[in-house]
Amino acid sequence: MSVLEIKTAGEPVLKQIAAPVRKIDKRIKKLLDDMAETMYATDGVGIAAPQVGVSLRIIVVDVENKRYDIINPEIIWREGSAIDTEGCLSCPDLFGDVERAEKIKLRYVTRYHKVKEIEAEGLLARCIQHEVDHLDGRLFIDIAQNIRKGNPPQRERQVK
Image (cartoon, rainbow, N blue to C red; front, side, top):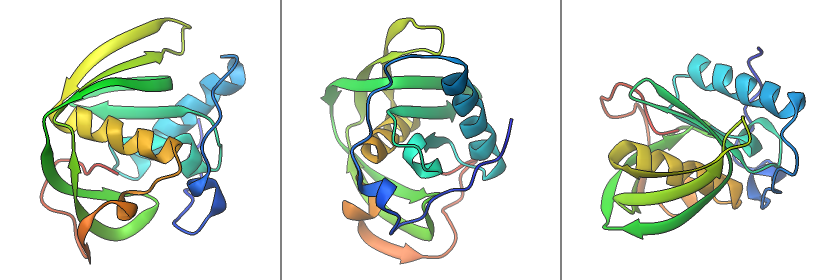
């Protein structure tokens, strides 16, 4: 596994709509593992393929020590609303308040070619929504209020 370079705001790949993954092969599985290693090395809880320069619909999320390798995610319903502070690996040292659904249902494909659906709430739901935004060419700073520089709020790991 390798730690990959993280693209920062201003890089064109971060504003593109990512293409669906057509075939899950060794290259995609290696990308998932490299993305996870990059996320852990930077103390994030999520990372999207465009953040490492690959315009494919792939995200990796780890919340409460459970890693999700998510390919071709589709949020099929949202419920409720919550505002919380977010940061982003692609926007270093910036934080802002973002309104997102409190609960979601996600359909995706695993690295083992299985279609799964999960219901998520709280930090997991927020993280998934943040990363799916990356796949649609949207950064958190595009929708955040009260954007500020500085240290993140005290949490085990930040939504990034």
